[in-house]
Image: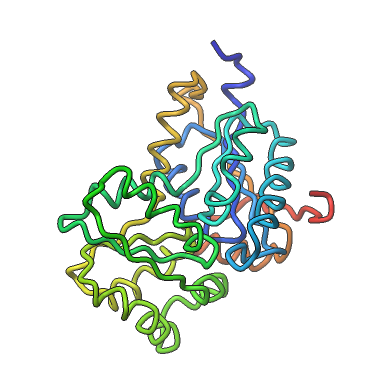
Length: 273
């Protein structure tokens, strides 16, 4: 049985920027009694264009900082970091570590009717083939078509989620995938749900968009239960946010997306992690 202090500790969540707030929101909704601390590594966004070794180094640094905040679980709310660094984090930490790729792959397998699945993500995530590997393990009959969409992250970070520029970029990225007659499209980057309206418009009504946020929240809840780390249901969790750069912009974007004020946004020195 875990101690009371362990049970009341926070769930740590990190991403390269604001994209991981898509996962944060779902966890907050599903587990309102849990305290959450979010780290946006905004000084080093995006991760998707970095080498695997660099992403592993960044992920370990983010985990180290969050561990100093007394967390009981780590959620890697970044597909690129999940693809490159999940195993390294699990090998080096003595708390549960949850990534976003496996939950997203499971959701895709559940939703597809034709077995023709598209995956979009950063260059890093797509280059690892992580989604395809897991989807094919779960559903060997599936055909998986992947496309890197590197410009989506900077648009999402700037809050440019609509308009002719992003619509044209989405048409360029998705055109080839749609020719494969996919019926399911995995948003393989936690920034991409911020662009879901334009992606859905380009993809069309016949294509179901899948993001990993909801499935990840369910995985977090199940792991807390299995690890006997669930906080007192009557409690109301505290929410805190850390950034490595641009806390004013992060606050504005976060409040717009989460729909409530961000009471605490703390800048942390990237050199310290």
